[in-house]
Image (cartoon, rainbow, N blue to C red; front, side, top):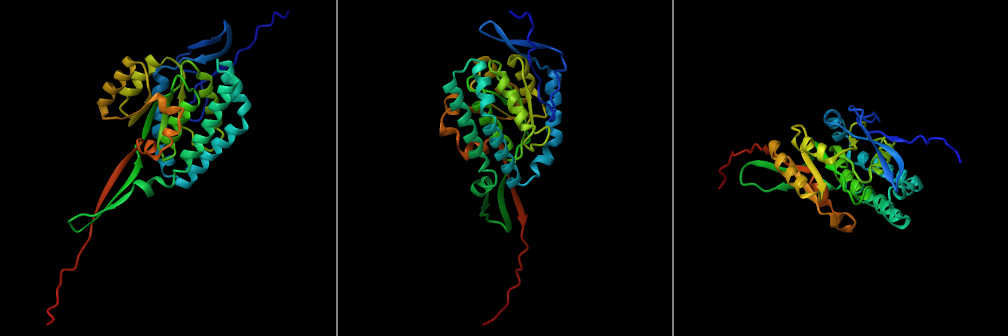
Length: 294
């Protein structure tokens, strides 16, 4: 029997398109069936601050890309997940999923990316409008990205739940800071590896692993985060999110856990939740000269 000590992979966090170790230097061993399978970083408040700064810095560049271009990048993410299916199935099994459930989770995740990508250049065609007004103005409404979006990954659907939050947020030009699942953190960082190689600008997606109870309050209170999205959390954390979001009037998007695994979530209204409506009043000059002709 070999006495060799296995070198465990350390899953680093994902900030600004790079994979640094956490600023705190802390990590935890992920153990399944009493066997260590990986090291996972425990992110700190400083890591969260750096992630928000990175997301804010790249926001204008990402939002200014054409909707068509962003859709193509989403398709690229789906293509790369499809080509790395075996790796993700293996990781999900390693974290406690059975093989059949892992295959379903991955297939649904890829299909969901394709669905939301298709709405990138159509969302304003559906929800934008020209509004009739009684004054001499041309009045119209368009949807715009809300800015930096904080996302909290589902504990039960580590890949599908994450995809169901990230893609609706970034497909229209938002940038994101994500707190990964505590129970299944490996999948989140593996997804970051795909995103970093799929033409998504560095800083558009930032993923942190660690303690949700430590990170969520700082995310919800951060004054440079414009909205926050999550699936069902423990009551104390959920209440804390709503309370802290009031500080800068964050838009709070809560998606019921039951919708994550169903096709009910595949709707443009989910994308709309991460956007703001801008209404413009443009004055129109009218010629009020009348001719007297009898």
